[in-house]
Length: 464
Image 1 (cartoon, rainbow, N blue to C red):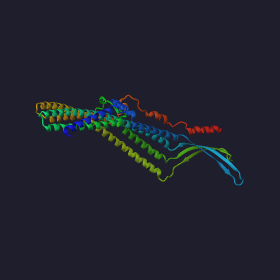
Image 2: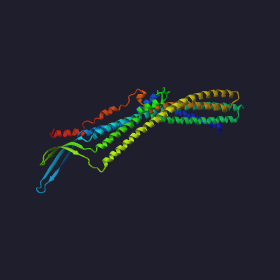
Image 3: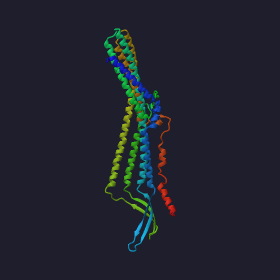
Image 4: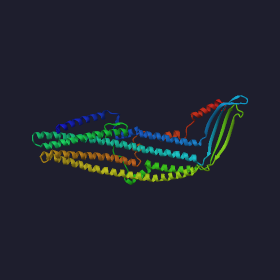
């Protein structure tokens, strides 16, 4: 097969692939996201990662309810029934009893109160983790949106370049037939066309990959993505951005909460060495016995004297964790500051790159016009024209990449400051309120089914 026939066949194959890809884009999935705002909203609503973190937070809320339980009395119900055989008399009697015991902690050196504070601190830590996840989900949506837009433009530029080269190849072939160019000129043009076809295939594959990444990040497939909105506002200086990051970033806030919790756990470990005082009562209902029903009330106290060194070891361990938590606060500040600086500089680089690439595009267009005119006069070859076309496509692709990098950098900067949230971006949708579940469960549950059953038993027994 000749070079010209091979390139023509490859062109038809790639054209068919492009049509198929376009058909897939037109009909696949739920095509909902049109603007960057739509993508952010869909990502927030559809993210399995956010749903997982919310469920984890609700589970952490229950720790507060369980800590409150330490301040309430405990009730236990026990029953026994059986037969007793007396060898001397040969008699058999049936015995049955039910006992209700209760215990209320009066004082434990503050351990329960500290446990409640630790549980509440854990809720604060989980909430900061949820904010961090929200930021990552929204940033992934921005990256997926801008990657999709970039790759769509790349494919369009590659398609236009392929069409231009194809026309040049045909024109060169016509000129060869009349003896105006050499066979070498046609072969060079056909080689460039083959390269352009390969680039189109690459861009199609990359676009499909970006499309699936968009679906993972946003939850819907893209459809006719619009130009992104104006860039969000940021602080005027890097120092101001760092100051906001130190106050707002969830990683810093989370490590501070962890440090505070470590302080509480030191006091908890020390509280386990203190005396414990409780009051307990017992009510026993006996049938067919000599003792009859009994009731008792007692005041109990205990002091841990020696437990094999476990208590002092726990104190040392909690202090080591406390020291680590304080170091983690410093480390988090350094890393957040570093990320803020990095994204600030990436934004500056992208801005400068856009200005430079715009000049590059203008210069490439002027050069292309001049080379075309020189080619018409016979001073330039077809290969020169095609190379100038390729240079223009490269320059236009570079500016597309620079604009994408600018958007990703500025949203990454917002994330590094702790501001990439639905509320700060003013997306205008209802957000998840962690207080709803916390207020519902934090004061511990009401009467349980077992408690209701116990109430029925004593009611029927005539003891209530």
